[in-house]
Length: 319
Image (tube, rainbow, N blue to C red):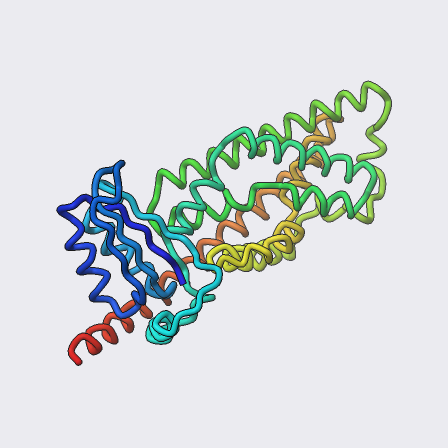
């Protein structure tokens, strides 16, 4: 169940109410004339079955509500309503599986923003991964993967292509390129300092590393794992099951690969740089491709469900 809070200019409120009252997926509807001072107008509240949210949001956008007023979409964690249960049953599909595109798109913009937090997290994660490589510690590698913030920006590439938001596509690409460049630069600097202090040597990088050798030896499994992990991650994001994302972070070696590039640069080790760069490219490419394909499938399926829902709503109105 979702709650829509709509701030509507007075001349659009009748059209807003018409859209909401005509849809059987709306189980509750309240109108507060003149309640909004900025922007000036009315406030309308509606409880909507999650499966029907995209259709209703699209109609409200068509009226110009986001341009002249505002539209807030808020999840309802717990609710008890016979009317709400009936509306939920009338909406085809499962609430847990439904994709609210407005929410997914906004999250993509937020996760792909090139800000201080993103740059700090990717730098710290890459430095931690560099230490993990020197110590050949799988535990530290996992910690670095969890800290890394890059998955949101990679998923945003697929959202941008599916929703045709090319500004978002450019933003995501810039954030990824700049983010990994900053992370590699900071880790290279840290490695040079550690080298100068005698804490690490080239032998620490080139020695046998059974626990972390996978970082610089990409193969077919690297691409397959990236595909599976990204598909799972996108499903978790679109269904609001963010708790499943930790497995995605642990599965794909983007941050450790960037760290090994940095160590290779600090010690002039061409093989380490090349292998790790290839691993990084393979993982990001696989994740971006899988994310896009998953979203394409979801969009296709929910378009079919929306068509079924429209036919059902038309039949209900005729009764």
